[in-house]
Amino acid sequence: MGIEIRSGKGQGYDHALAEILLLLEQDAIASGEPPQAIEPAAPVSQTVADQAKTLAWLTGRVEALEAEISQLQQEKQGARCFADTARGATNLSQENEQSQLEINQLHDENNRLKTELLQTQSRMEGIQCFLNEGAIERTKQEKGATAAIEKTTPADAIKTQAASPMPQKAPDAVSQADLDPDVLRALNAILDYNGYDATSHQQRWAISIPVMKDLLKQLGKATQPKIEAVLRAKSEATEQHHRHHGLGQRHNRVHKGRSISEIIKL
Image (cartoon, rainbow, N blue to C red; front, side, top):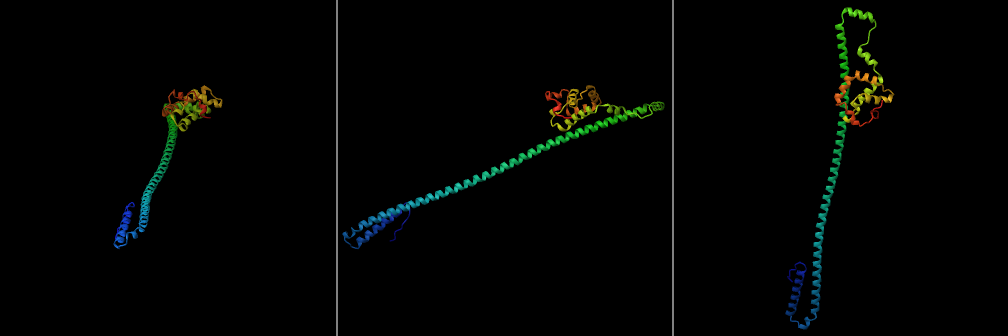
């Protein structure tokens, strides 16, 4: 009939149907039909109008549902994007935790290597100290022997040979042989502990007669004269050891009365 039907919340369909009904009514009037012939069609027109309204309502409802579906799809897409973002953030957090764990492990390994390096350096310093001590003693022996030779005249040499036909031991060698081996063992045990086993300044022990007596109780030997003899013979090495580790006369107060026998076993 040349009528344009447009959608739009049901209003377009109602308008188009109204125009159709108007044209039908005009055609009926133009055909010259009596009014009573048109009356039976009135209920039919009303029925068509009702159906048009129903169709318009359904159409509007469909359009509303389509709009709601489109909105839900957009919300679902947004939720999916948020979930992907959250999942990515979770994965990134897990990667950061793994990286931090590896960094902590590297720090622990570095600290362990530093401790081993310090212990190795302490051992090397102790070995160097003993080597220097031996070199000093040998130098003293050589100097003493040279001085004795220089002061000895041929007559003195003959007298000495006659009085002592057998070769004599050097004074240092004789004094070393006279030292008590258990006391030497206790002294070396303290030197080794301070140089090798102690990992901090507070753990070291200053060498003294009370400390030596306490340590030698393990062997049932705590004779002070023997301890004094060893400490006199090894005084230079002991003093050098104390200077190297910074051990003063009052250093052992850091142990707060603790026995050295709890630490060192002979």
